[in-house]
Image (tube, rainbow, N blue to C red; front, side, top):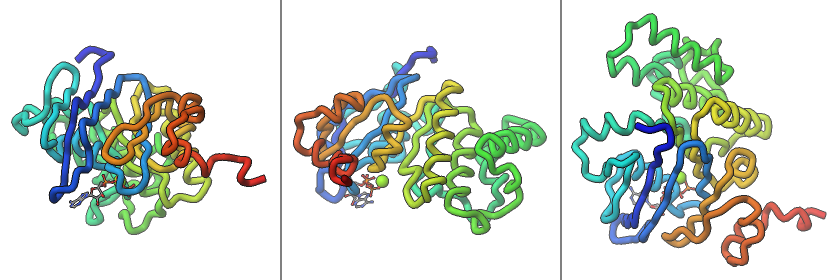
Length: 250
Ligand SMILES: Nc1ncnc2c1ncn2[C@@H]1O[C@H](COP(=O)(O)OP(=O)(O)OP(=O)(O)O)[C@@H](O)[C@H]1O
Ligand SMILES: [Mg+2]
């Protein structure tokens, strides 16, 4: 795949139990442009990530990784194609019965492509990158919330993806934990990874992204830079930004 490829959603419609979640949703993630999708709870943010990962199938519309349409692609072909994407799930989604090291190396063990010492080397390198190397042999139950998120990021990094999706990575963390995750995302970006985050945490979004998509009532209501968003005349966007209006706190 070329170094400048995109992940694209075209005219995606998706509903659950007859209720429309997304209608004619278009979205494009270019390599090197870090984005955040914003929207209130229940707007459909996690759904968008799951659609892009092929964990959900749209009712209609198409999703492309590079030039290849992945919608309804056979599983084996699709898995090959989606290796360029990793996700840090909302809540981390670590396997409780596995150690931190086993969690991080899981995908590599499953693939069976690399010798064990090489997998162990990668696992330790990724854990050190996120700052939790000493937790290698602990179980998820022995970790704090912030450590769990960092282990989940290390797991996403293990397969060396081009794109990393972050689903609410800072929810439930204290200010230092939020700062740590933001600076980790910035370091990943400096190393050439492209991040896509979904969140309703505006401070994290503005600290880590260049472009913002606002999802409202099944549709993309806004797409643009932070300055364009702050200057947007769209009433729903203005309402969403209100908590960051410093004049309220004077
Ligand atoms: N399996 C399901 N069955 C029924 N409804 C579902 C299912 N999964 C998601 N939904 C509904 O789809 C909508 C979008 O869900 P989604 O998880 O994408 O929202 P979200 O924007 O990620 O919310 P949050 O910010 O709370 O994580 C929600 O209203 C949710 O209730
Ligand atoms: Mg969600």
